[in-house]
Image (cartoon, rainbow, N blue to C red; front, side, top):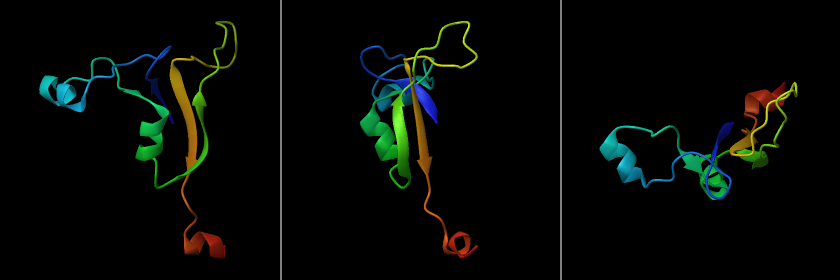
Length: 83
């Protein structure tokens, strides 16, 4: 997953949920902190969650430090384990 990071160096809006519902708008994007992301993806196993590494404009890779990048996995089902 990727998403806007909250706090210093982040981007996106950190408004209370009620403001988003009242305005019916995302204001450019929702910002999350690591606790919120871990809560949202709490039923999955966290493999990695970190801020992206900044990449120069001429890099073949994408990276912006105001974004989170995360990898989560779900537990294998009994059928998948039997394969």
